[in-house]
Image 1 (cartoon, rainbow, N blue to C red):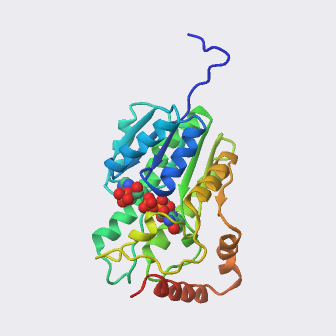
Image 2: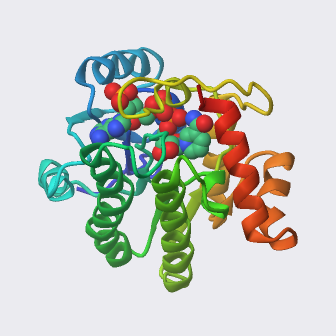
Length: 270
Ligand SMILES: NC(=O)c1ccc[n+]([C@@H]2O[C@H](COP(=O)([O-])OP(=O)(O)OC[C@H]3O[C@@H](n4cnc5c(N)ncnc54)[C@H](OP(=O)(O)O)[C@@H]3O)[C@@H](O)[C@H]2O)c1
């Protein structure tokens, strides 16, 4: 059957970690723009609430996928759950932080974070990218952080894994030039979401104490969303954050590393 001139084919966006914070804000922006949604999160109750909240505002078709994205082979399971549905926008957003000296943090939690930030982000991108390239269009956004630009003592694996996401995203953005698929990597500074309250030190949550330069999640999501729609590769919200991201170019790396340690001690230390 031929589509009427005015009828548009609906596009679908998949967002991970969509039950709260930046993922939720990005899902709202996508729904507002008319996308159907596939929302993935570990927390099914919150995911259900988000679905109801979005459905009350916008007419999007919303599929929920309840998965722990730190588990092995989870990307394959998500891909199967899509049952051939085309994904036009992929946002790899889910993530969490671990505070503490590398020698002291819990390995199972360390490995879960690395699996989530590195393996799941990479595998889900690979699985969904193939369809995008075949169709000659698509947008991918990977969630990195200002943490990606220098080493982070006392959050070493978090900073290192976010640096991986930045490097990986910039590299494939370059590879994909001319295919119709763009890759954006969003690098927010501190943002007021649940993330800041639940950065784990292995045993309990540690709320951050530095209240300076904390962004609003709605504004960060809007900035990232616009950057993704324009196909911008590296998106750093905020003038001060842009300045901070460039600091390692002008100050010796070991000095920046020492400053980050001081900030982490002051921010999350006892
Ligand atoms: N907030 C910041 O200051 C900041 C700054 C830079 C970058 N970021 C990045 O932004 C992204 C989103 O964080 P946010 O600030 O929006 O935090 P958030 O409010 O905690 O949202 C993260 C969402 O991801 C979910 N999630 C966590 N682990 C998961 C897993 N293994 N499987 C499936 N879902 C999982 C969380 O579920 P639960 O709540 O149930 O765990 C939550 O719904 C993260 O990648 C984070 O690293 C945040």
